[in-house]
Image 1 (cartoon, rainbow, N blue to C red):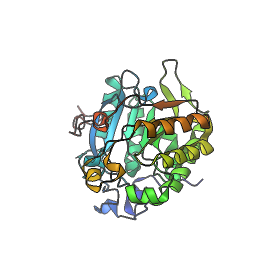
Image 2: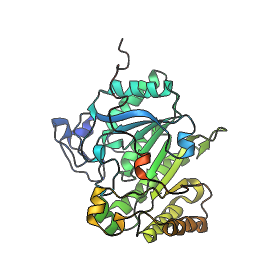
Image 3: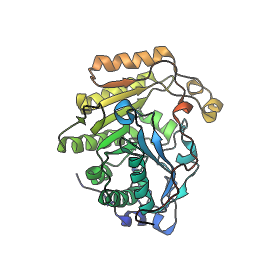
Amino acid sequence: MERADVTAKAYERCELCPRRCHARRAAGQAGLCGATSTLRIARSALHFWEEPPISGESGSGAIFFTGCPLRCVFCQNHEISQEGFGLEVTVSRLAQMMLELEAQGANNINLVTPFHYAPHIRQALGLARTAGLGLPIVCNTSGYERPEVVAAMADVVDIWLTDYKYASADLAARLSAVRDYPQVADAALRAMLASLRSKGGELVGEDGLMRRGIVVRHLVLPGHADDSCAVLDRVWQICGNEVDISVMNQYTPNDVCRARGGDLARSLTDQEYELVLDHADDLGFERMWWQQGGTVSESFVPAFDATGVQGPELGAR
């Protein structure tokens, strides 16, 4: 597989995400992700609501980046994904944030929706590693990634925490404005799996924390359990038991979904969720995470208030 250019030159005519919008981000033009070449971050803090092998008891060191290539109508992070909240930071400040999270006891550095800033991230990780960063790096992604970018960043990513949202192109177009989501997610997941295999496969410590691996997440949407089962079919066909899966029931309708009406204006039923979990069992997944009882998405969404973003840069006195 060819590798994409993930140097600063990529911002001149951007093709970092599958939309390949060719925005001249280096000249200040925002891409379809909403970002120019100015790095913006909304939060840097310990996060306790990822899957157990990621968060553990000490928390995952989550850094939330501004912007997103998708336009999911049900997004709970819309303040940063679609509305542009975030502070401008330098690459050296990003590197320092990683070291600060390690000092706070983070189990890993969790980069949330990062690859539209891939050149910045490569540079910051290089600085942080040189300064002594020793934690695994998590790429927390929507799954809508160019496989060439996945391949280009694979040497600096240890854990892929990736969504697989839809098997239906029609549903992807209607809910996230990207008809090609299923085929892109397939290709991206294959590239992640190739990277994992090249490094020797999944690695989990005696403490239960993942050091290397893939967790495929899927949020079950009300009224669309059939598509959820089709997603699991696709993940099984690509990966089998080489990955963990996480089947989530935390969908909560936001104001946009309530206004639209229909199934997305309500919560997921227990029956819908159990149907999808049963299908995962029938397929044969051995490492599966699920959510018990009633969950509310807002309870898993941190306050996007620039916590941990401002501060000294790496090497500054």
